[in-house]
Length: 156
Image 1 (tube, rainbow, N blue to C red):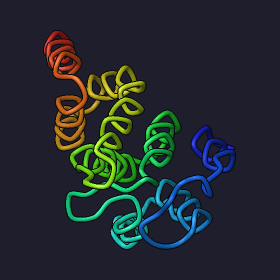
Image 2 (cartoon, rainbow, N blue to C red):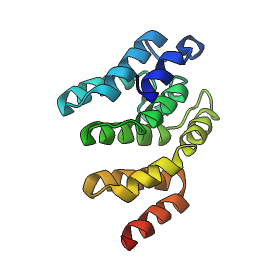
Image 3 (cartoon, helix red, strand yellow):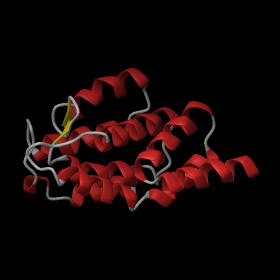
């Protein structure tokens, strides 16, 4: 079992109010999303997250544990296409706000920042569009880490 799968299964999803569906459904949607290696399927699975943890620039409570799972999934060996979709999901969540709970985006950002070192390492190793997505995410999280990733890649 991967780190992300273990974290997903150990999370009490019932503690998080979701925009729609149940915690069990979100858990399954996340597991399927991080496990897929097909671009078309990942596009379909995106909608298992859309409207549940985020929608139209709004983030919902299920995003808190989802950020942990998405970040943990980057530790595991994933196909490049899957990793790109995961990074985009994280970036999307961190770009959203919340009228109902203005501190929710702050909490999501804090959770993602814990993995900033991992994102920096991935950005140092990545090339092309994958690197661009990681640098955009790092800029959102911590511009200092983005600068580190840019300068480190230039030296290699």
